[in-house]
Length: 212
Image: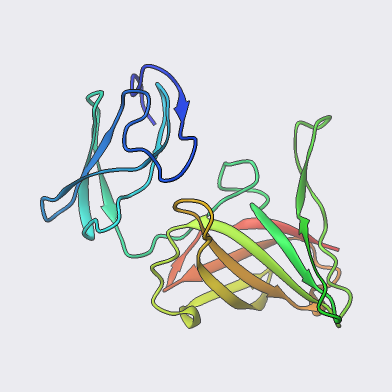
């Protein structure tokens, strides 16, 4: 975030992400002195969204924007952050439910909807009442794929430890990671609750879901 970062607002329209957008590029110089162009999602006068280039060395790195702004960031192997439905990093999770019935039939469900009258996202409570079904919560975020092992990714829904069945790249969107949690039927009746995830000992921001 800043001022006068770009002359206009422009978004990337496909993959691979461009390294120049709206006449702007972002260069990352890592602690080894190697400079790389950062792939760009979005540029505007007050905000630039970019991806840390692959191969950037761990440690402090300098960010240089062609419009003249500079800054310093710390590069880590993991830095788990969960996306929220309203893009604030708090409130309801950016997530979907995968439901697998006893006959193998699969379906997907949203966990929130945007209420126009209230001008905000509201929860669609998750039904976990059928013990013959497998219910998975797929939570989206970033900074997760570098985890050391799946066993070092831990999750709680409220006060209940839940099984983590996947933690890694989402696969369709640049920079997006995904964590899949199995929601047991004994969570029935929990109501609105917090999802807490810790990756290699580093906690992510908390997000909310609602369980019927």
